[in-house]
Length: 344
Length: 166
Image (tube, rainbow over all chains, first blue to last red):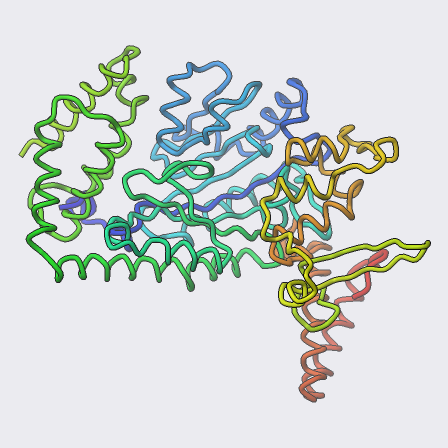
């Protein structure tokens, strides 16, 4: 049973394949250098102006502002592991921060590659809802700041590949069956032909982990925001979702017993192991997630598995332990957490 | 911008200066391949930037008055220095953007100020001009007259656009 069933809320669409959807808008203040050429004072000025412009969004009771320059590397790592900031934002130097909604449905990165990157996040395939929220945020800010805008190139961004709308839609897809049936390359090729990027679990520059793939539009110029959204939703993403479902059914038809064995074997290892590296845990959790979605495993909740993908990361384990952990200590803490959470 | 040889969007742009003569070539992916011209859209952005920004005469390379960045800086970081770089290095950056954006040559999305903004009205004008072309080509003259009337009303509402034909 999912948390949505328990609370009587509607189940987010396509949750069996789509972990989350996201819409992002990149903006820069006019009259200031982009972040990588800005002085510390200029970056501080960006923070002050953006906080003021996005006051209801950034500074409300349900939103927390995190000054990334002053928090610990571990706190930055946890934010990164929760997909609230990028690796670049965590690792770079200088004044920068992020506003995070309590329910983590929204985050605003300030002074990452661009002055402002506004994100809205929803479970399942709901990019329209994400876009509405992020657009509302952009409109609210527009009344208080002047965004850098060029009549021909649209909203100006540090990397010209984001120019124009500055809008990127993405979906985090769980594609274990396409991986098992070796069909994933077809998806990659089809996505490339449709100007969509396929990235790993942590977005740009990251590898797939736990058979998660982030699909997003590469083109941001020459189409309206609605056209970009329409293309994203009407072409490949629902197609990949159906393709993954077909592959899951094909695996069941081909050899149900072998699939059941694989799923239960991985669950048993997760419930028993005393040490576990993160890659192994992600891989085995992915198989268990597949088993839960195909109803091969009773009494394991999908949201429990979804949450574990984050909780087993080393930053989260160290935060939970309240101290720095060596790699062997992390592996032991991870295995202990998995045993606790998945105990039958 | 359209291909010199067909109606598809041009993704390869070359400027040839020979004997004082300045020639521009704009080709779509198909005709670029036929002509043996490599498609820059197939290359990563940093390689594109490196290619465009390789200085032949370092002393002749300007820097951006807004931030001091040169094309060499942009090549190194793969990032522009400030909004003004878009105008300072318009030609080089324009080629790069069009290649990276699969031939997209102009922003057609939202702009500051909402539907009543100058940007929105100019955008609407461009859309109507394209619609008018299609109506004329299809010999839908009543439709074309309606679009012309809409264009007339729009042009009364907005200031003239310098250097931009609608």
